[in-house]
Length: 400
Image: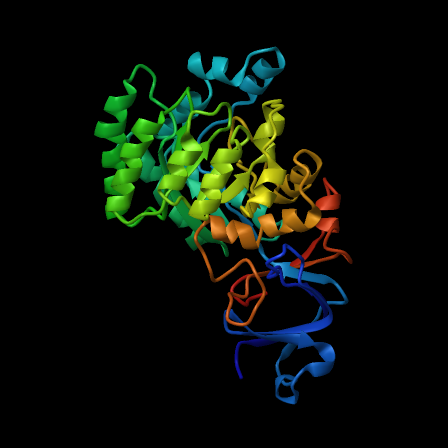
């Protein structure tokens, strides 16, 4: 049969275990038919009829689902290296933001960069993730804060999927910051919500996101945006409890958010609300590290409440200029106390859940054949090392 690939001599981390195990199979084989996984099992159990397929000997390496970066801001103009210096000289994230830096400085650069240039810059960032075995990238808008630029960012995000062998999921993040000199309520009602409506009309929005913090939007303002998203039948997610606790997590949970992201200041009642809503906690150690934060997310409480934990880069020009999902996995272990199993689940199975996707993130018959072959023996090696990329080969949609 055409388009049939049999991978042999491989260990497979299926990542389908509800108890957060690897679901590890050794001396295994896997059949891809078209862009789907058709069969997997022991090498000794390969049906005779499959042996006429194209074959790939993996040399005893490890096969996992392709990684998923479920929280990024890789479409933007400019950089904020000077702010990195300012923070090291003593300025806080809030002080930089209130002085017109932070998100607002990137807004200026993004507005001034045309669509073609934005795409070229974003493709370089996407390439870096793809080179580490990533098969799916979530990309947010939020550096426009006007209708035209928000749409421009989302169009660029969609274009990445056409230019590269990678899936892209978009999030409308018009509620990322209040434009300099603007009133937050006026901006939300007269610019942000109309921008969402325009983006939705163009088919550019897969989810709605926002930044619920004292330096951005409060729960009442975010509630108005989420209510409009509900009317448009768009799922929501939220940056919440990153720098303080003002109730964002409970708001997100009340709308059955796909995920609540950052959550360093989320308390046990917040986590219980997430559990009830079946929301995923997206941990972002890159921002925690860059901002020299000390308040860690309550990982043990997430475990106790059975709240799935995802891990992402939060790649952005200010608080997390980190282009390595493998490094994010290591940092989630060393800084937040995740186990290597949890870190890999956080960039596969739970990352897919954070995006509302059911066709990827695990290895099982019927799932997409987005896979990564690693030059490692133990799955824990993917979180153990940093500054090392052990990717041997990536398979996207069944294609080598």
